[in-house]
Image (tube, rainbow, N blue to C red; front, top):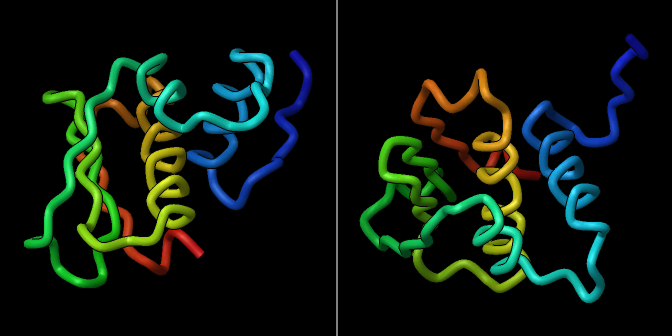
Length: 103
């Protein structure tokens, strides 16, 4: 088995790149299509603590993002949380990613 090559800053980002590779790196990138490919819904919540930009609820199959994020930040959160979802070992947990996890 070949060694894993790190392409992102975390295992979740590596998994996000893997999803894009599975989709053939469609350009322009359609984050909604990536989310749909993973079977995840999207919700915005202004009640999340300020440091929490995104939450993946694996059981509900939903990514909750902090309301009011800019488009690029929102897309980054969706891809990051989608990366968590794509990793089987991460699906067992509810992930909460703060601004520190998402540079």
